[in-house]
Image (cartoon, rainbow, N blue to C red; front, side, top):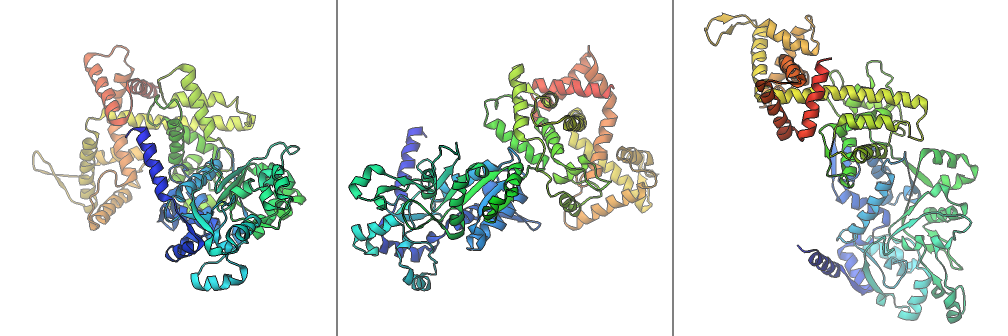
Length: 631
């Protein structure tokens, strides 16, 4: 569809959503849709919940965040269940400023932006509709029109609680424009928009000497004092501060802990009592979520200052650590690259994964368990099956260090290094080695990395390089084995026939001669030795395989070589071991013969067609693996 047609279609949709009527008509609407009168905290919670919730192993994943934030499921679950959910139920936690604390580039700003954009879209839905007194600069809740002495009766009839009092401006308008008849007051549907300053606000402190409190609470309009005669006339006041405009929604308080004290004290009554002081008026009611974000150093400095104790008790701190899962870190890089101007550069498979491995290693702490090294821990955190460990072990490791994920390399550093590699070399294709090299070079320029940390990080780059070496060999292994899946299946079937014969103490029948023969011990051991199964452990391993086959059969499932992680690894290694010499000769020969050249071309074609490489990265991979095998 033409873009102008889409603009016209959007304009028509906006028009169709508009609603205007008297307060009496609004009350009729409330009978039909009581959720319309929900609080700002409740609206945000329902917005998150309505996007979908997935529960698995007692943990909740909220789909609202899944397109932008990766690997933060636990932090987000805590945020929703410990702050938004009880706040929506009007529990005391809603009277707190929400402070997101975490390292740089950890997703705090993205999280707040998602809440803002989400609210803007949610108010355009039936479940998120917001109604306000028409002409009110603070888009005030129409229910404030109900006098306090009648609110118990209103609750009995509608089941809706009313909090807050009518603002000074609307109190005057009620008398002067409507003659005190609240049923005639015009109500309209509003749509949140940060750009139009409706329901979404952002306050960013600047020079404390020059910044005015009016930025938060509004100011007197001196040009109208002559007309209205008094500074205390609400018509002579501009209700255009961020607290005014964010009423009914959300206000982001940027760099809150760096702000001058006079700005922070306004938040005390707003959070605790739901109102704030502006001009020469009584307290003005406001219903809004105040969310701020900071890093750990600033927060520690803030709470160390005794003068901040009153405000500290009105803050709820939610940690937002770095992601600790390799697969999710990879998604972060993919997203950042998609949004950049280097999205057309070919990035060889596993490049971002290897970069993510290095990044995650910098964020992990060495486990107190002697049997778990960092690589093993990294794999377990990413949900990989590691022999001898289960989910309980992972949970135990996570409890060892509460601060894990609050330090380490940030995603922006990795993307900066990838970008500089591409731009500096004018490359159209990059691989894992290019990125690891760039990450290593950049450590000297990183402002917060000490010499001690640098040595540590260089070691992590070496570990990531070793992991890549194994990945590269497996990639070439798969490409070299013609009909890899078929070869693996044939080898596994052969192995299983022999294992079954061994365990049941029976003989096999030779398919050619028909004579009975003993199980092929040499074949079985050649596979088992690939994964370090000792002579003493072979019987237990073979019996374990048979038990797994029986368990799957009972569930109506078929066993294949991927059904058992260690057997899968053994089969792959055995296939590759059998082809190792062919790979070495073919990839390292400077003047390959016709047969070798044909094989190389076949492998390159398979890497391109089936594994996601391009011609450049496929040939680089083959040369690199050849050099590894010839060492």
